[in-house]
Image 1 (tube, rainbow, N blue to C red):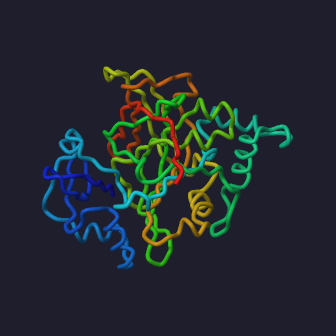
Image 2 (image 1 turned 135 degrees about the vertical axis):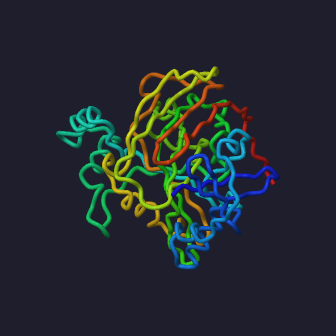
Image 3 (image 1 turned 120 degrees about the horizontal axis):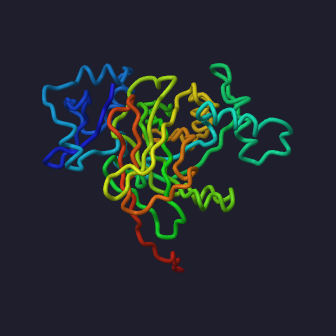
Length: 330
């Protein structure tokens, strides 16, 4: 089941079930958030509630997207109550990449870089038995709901950035119930978008490199994540021609951690179990155009696609100006 949030022609918000190009409107709801909260409070599955509230009105996804009316698949009315976070060094990549990575992490742990040590910890302990905690993954904070962009919206790179590169990933989307329990609403394809040049200057700059916009959607996949996900990441030039393209894989079969382990190490902190909050949590990637020597220029477009998630996620790169952050004394 795929859900989307969008604005209708009058500017009002709606939620719909997406099947091919047909969006069937869900009656009585103007947000995925409200739908999820009712499912939590009613102790029912989200899919069951959607099926019970499907109306007769429909819309064309292609027309909604062409008009720029797609919204992120889950958001919060107060952007400060949406956390955007992620985990890295979690994916094994292609068979060739896996073989090369295993050679890198073999031997004496003291000879490994911090990144390779972290990756090795995940390979050795990221998939514990059900109900137990495994190795901690790399974790980072990206921002709040104000940085999330929908499909079709531009991704803004600050003018002080040294790079703006895509990271095709799967994100988990969560709502914290009134009981302080995290509830996974579903999954979405995402572009985590980072500054890889800054990060490579010094790994301690990772936090700076991640404080960027990101994009998620267009659709939310309700239910369990398939064990194996096939996707394609592209960079299109200003004329719309593909100038870089590469397949990527995700899902637990292709990861060194289980989803449950990544979720545990995020939601074990009481800060992240505040009733009513929304969480967008990226699960990592193994495929980057940056790794192939590609520098994306303003006016070019990122496209991330995986059939399991419906329509492709497309965002044009832009640069926005920044000023010196002068602080005044009271």
